[in-house]
Length: 197
Image (cartoon, rainbow, N blue to C red; front, side):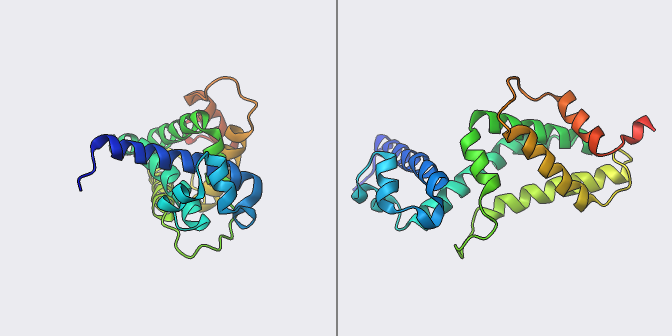
């Protein structure tokens, strides 16, 4: 039996609806507290439909994270491929991340704030997360070598940037999009711009 394009689209939409409903349940109850009944109800489907697509709440949880990190990664690929100066690429990546956060704040708050201790053994979303972190770390290191960032411990800088950055964009009190100037100001608060010394 051949599956039509329309059937494939309907399946993708059902899966998307399940993940959207599950996101709300996980945010409210956590992975341990959530049940498949609540995920089914939250997505507007019966348990049979839910189990057709996912075998467990851990599988649903993992799918939310994989889809979120994968979509973020795909949105950043054109910026990474541009091969501009490290500082410029770094800023453009941060701007694109903020655009993603503004478009889907609930998802990105979940992605960035998922508990550090996850009982799920398989964590396929880490592939995208680790690639992104490696690129950002590499840009900081290349920026230090090129004199675009001062000689600092790039791992510490990366951790400091992450905390301040997420605080700035997930705080919910910003009414206007984040600009390149906002990112530069954030960078200059963290470190002295070597071009201004």
